[in-house]
Amino acid sequence: KEKSAAPVTKEELGRATWTFLHILAAQYPDNPTRQQKKDVKELVSSFRPLPLVINDRISSKSEHDVICTQVQMLPRIYPCRECRDHFKEVLRANPVLTGSHAEFSQWLCHVHNVVNRSLAKPIFPCERVDARWGKLDCEQNACEIIGSTSIF
Ligand code: FAD
Image (cartoon, rainbow, N blue to C red; front, side):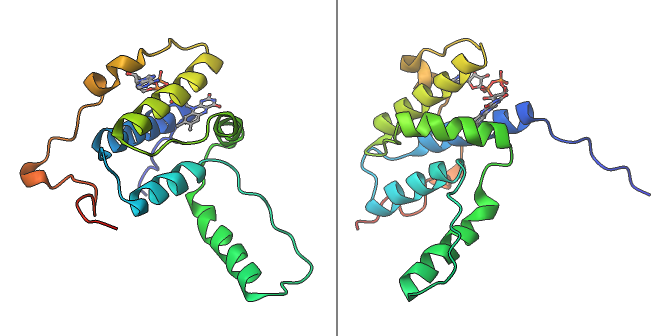
């Protein structure tokens, strides 16, 4: 029988998630499309707990649609309860900024520092964020965010 892999710790999960988010920010265009802004907002929001919608009756189609969307989002929420609960408060105080590469990468650096502070970790100098998280090294621009050149 195959041995199961060691469980992933919340530190490993956190490191991998921050890496993903900072690389995403590094690739985020200077002039994002409306769709890209929406995608990033939804992604970041999926790290916080969703409000539980408990209704006796679903009276209209739109209400039903809202609930379906929330249920579909459930698998996307961050799989560390303590982190979700904390990050929800961080997001409440610091709504995500997605207007440009600079705005999003600086916002992300700031909220990462808020989490760092709460865990007594060193504060990262945000003016160095582009140097720390360079763009992905991909052949033939294959790492561009999908749709980054299209106009909405
Ligand atoms: P990480 O914080 O994972 O950072 C990885 C690397 O990013 C660092 O080595 C550094 O080079 C760079 N870096 C650090 N700060 C910044 C910055 N501000 N901007 C740019 N780059 C930076 N853990 C908990 O115990 N409790 C929590 O409530 C909690 N909440 C979390 C919420 C979210 C949304 C995420 C993604 C993670 C959370 N974590 C939480 C995990 C925690 O933040 C760390 O990921 C984990 O402790 C591992 O830390 P690390 O020292 O390896 O560096």
